Image 1 (cartoon, helix red, strand yellow):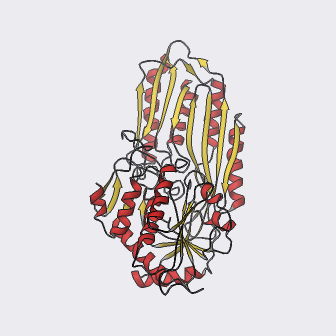
Image 2: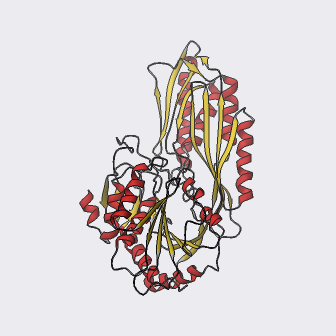
Length: 487
């Protein structure tokens, strides 16, 4: 596996990616990858600095003849989203990513690949170790915890960076140059309830929603993909209203920034309704599959009778309000931008639902490029869940990145892209959360831009990185470094 990846061109990029992917690097557990990057910089004889939240800065002087160019910051994040297929046996805390080549794509075996943002980090590493590339003075900024709160970027103190231009390497379409992005905020609803004993003459079922594509809850939110938590709630809602179904457990989704692919519930119904319940559910399943047949052709919804009926369930009155709150809560695209064509302005992802043992937790990630709209949608969600008696916490807010179409570095990148590729790039804002907006709060005078190689299916086990696109990205980066404006 490793040698197959290492033989890809450009070798300097893919070798560093293979080395990086051998190091476990989940968000909030970046100790090993931080040590790896620090050792990398020290072994090159470069200046290495670690701040109080474990962001790493590595400084490399300008090459001969480039000393009069503006100093730049190359920036990427060290952590990666950890997702795997249900049937994949893999321990993200101890194992490196198992990669393979599939035509023009590099994939992982049943897990996320870590190309987000591993390819950007690998490119920065390749620049730092190069002895032939022309470039101005470089500060390589490796941030932590981008995927679950952006706490690295949020806690980077002002005054540490000396660069005048920041190149963020975290965009996932190689024909795009990003000049703006959405901000985000976490909405968490929690409640406790007194469980009831399961009534006599009940039968238990497990309901499993699986086979969904999942994906990035910002980049992919407009694609009409299924959300396992919303699909599950449709089944529970109908079962409760028509057959008195009661919920014992729900485990749905995993990470806020990943569209949930799977949900499993354990429920009970009165045995007298058993046959009618199964028949009714089959009809609803057929309807849902028909609705999603284009975007989710592999969707499966499986009902299995439990050998042992659950001993306790959620009370009917609590469940009444729960399924209605879930049905009310916004999910997916909330509003499209009026200023940019085909750009999602505001959205929400109902990312994770956990219910059982008298406790309920619903976790959402709300995004918007308009700060007031972000908080307005968060308050809509708060209202839906507070009306059912939940305590709702709104936290982790981070700002969007306001586009600057007059950016000086943008005027450099566009003609370089056009010269290399024979066409103009798409200058866009994106609905993902890039760290540029946060970094700009403490460094308002830095001119920022974002670009990267094509990565599809980020935040899901379907993640894949294009080999030819990575070659295109590397050539673009090399040419940019050689053409940074003078001070």
